[in-house]
Image (tube, rainbow, N blue to C red):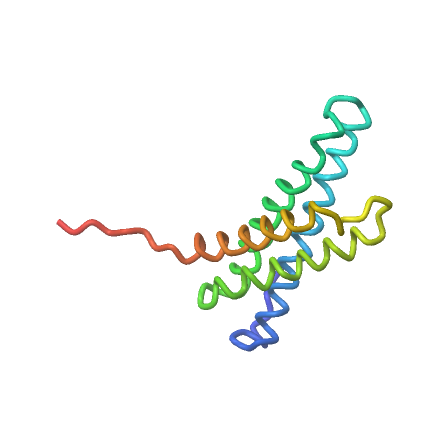
Length: 136
């Protein structure tokens, strides 16, 4: 998929790249959580672990979405793009959780919020970290 250079460097470009990253993170998390739900239904995974699995999958998905969004946008505003992607992903998760029978507006939502935003920030930090050069 070729990225559009029309809005590069503008706020609209930043938002659109963050939106793409959040969409990828949401799709990835749904895919992994459906697999985890299948493992619970099969009896392989205990149902009590699903809250921890949900937070872990959301953190990994936010990290992945942050890397995608930052790569699409460029490394100029990596932290802002990573946090914007994480915020959008959290909103997607809350909206998706509102339609589920067991809503996410419980005690897990705070842990989910912290994990998603921290992963987006880590993606921003890791994307701009430069290799140190040794001088001889």
